[in-house]
Image (tube, rainbow, N blue to C red; front, side, top):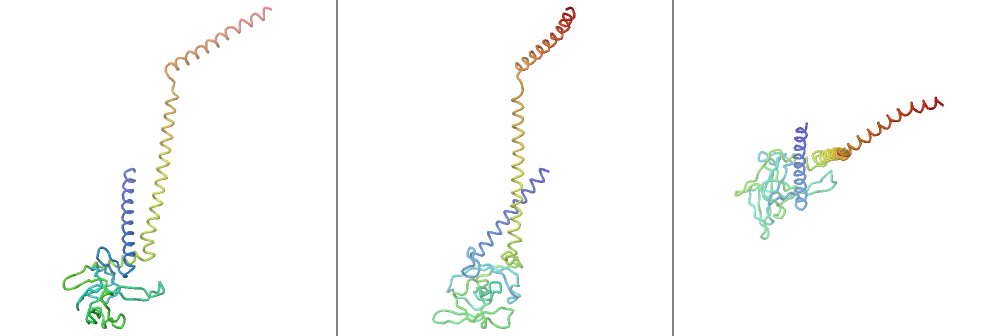
Length: 249
């Protein structure tokens, strides 16, 4: 039973550490995406594919990892880039910044700067009607160029999106932490009660040991007992003699 409890405690401690790591990761992704709409972790951008627009290069639900890029870089036709767009959020009730990952299909120079037209590989039309021509400051990262190739993790983006949602964060992070907190609290209370019982037992044993008589005290008690018994016997012997005296009178 003790071995089982020990193993259970180790497993629970490991789960708590994993949950804390996941929580810290989600918090980092959320904080680093506030300015650009996409997380920027150690120079890399992580995004979940939200549609089938780039199939078969990437599929909805994939997590794509690319390199974050500074503004005003010079991109080429054929590059797959992450760029800022906007979309109406029914949950928020207003437009929010979203990040798309599409391929550059046209490029123009305007007053020494460049603007780009993008398109999803699986889309019939370009993004001109939605996003128009975009400038370099709207591009926040690259997924694929002639010199660089990003990474794709199948379906992991769906999990990340769920963990970042309210109910996902609650069921996967908050609820288990509440359960673990209650478990740890009960374990602390049980250990405290066991400690008090052990402490009371030790105190009782010490009291019993201190209450034991020494050899001298034992001898004195025996002598007092024998003297008491002798006095009782003497009283019994004297009683018949006093009764005889009374009858003679």
